[in-house]
Image (cartoon, rainbow, N blue to C red):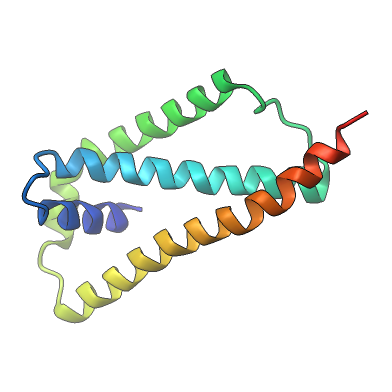
Length: 129
């Protein structure tokens, strides 16, 4: 995750109007992690009929806040250490890093929007009396 944070941070730095690239990278990663957790939740609920109490907005806000706090502590606060670790990467490493970043973002997005609508209606139908 540190490497993906670094790559996003560097990508956001290239946008001239972006005056908070490190913060935006953290928020972007947090959102994507939340989407990934949502997918896991949907799949667990559908395939294993595991009942969670994530059906209210307060729980969602708490989970997103916890993810934000963890990313703040482990990514944002340590961004200079992360920068020092990855700043001298080779062209090959940069290429691989960009490919991984694109795969993570597109893959997460595609999986959530493929599985989400497909299974959430089935889950709702299972719980309807």
